[in-house]
Image (cartoon, rainbow, N blue to C red; front, side, top):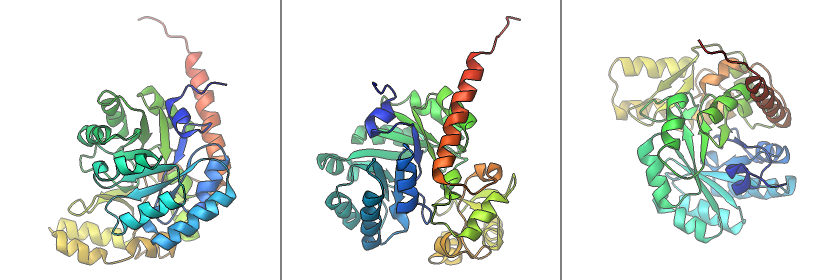
Length: 320
């Protein structure tokens, strides 16, 4: 059967559902589980030393015979070594973020790699397209992790990006259900990238305490912080409160860096310190109430997407 969806065709996947490459959450177990469920699993290189990344890639190749990718933050201090590993291990799909796509896109593509870049505004969407990427992820304000400074919501961002570029657009930010996936498609998206909903998957490498804190969170429990450094959406805890207080008192970039320290995200998300760690997660966390296998998460999202699409098709609108 001919694949008509441009992202499914580009990435050779059945469902236009991509698991985000999240730090401390998306190792080989999660990536292979999502890929085996016929979405696209992604290994998050941002929290891995190069030798650890190589191990995860090799284990992922043993765990699935379906496509998977690697997310590479371009500001990563060992980015050249990481890219060498990706090429040596014959990874076919790379999602780049946090940096200039013009630096590495042509090199990656020359090595037969499909390149997708994450952006949060039209300016960088155009730069990514000019750099030659195959598609972009348009990430709205609702997203977890590091966020755009413009604070443009997914509802506004997706149609703007779709009207700006002529390459496929993957929507991200606030998407964790079939209904929100359908909304993204209505806005013009060709696929969705989902982070938070997969962060609480059984196969996620996040600490169980972090997963439990996510599924017990409520509306308003996340906030965008540290905009003087790199904006990041944090789940409320003692560290987030300290950041909020420091910002209210006018803390500068250096003071925020000192407060952040080193390995703060690892302390919280991977090691399970729920008060002193940095807990990155999206606004959709308030709607996540259960830890489930990644396959079940993907299949439930897809089933709801189809159901709601059919329900909308059956609606009768009257003229008023």
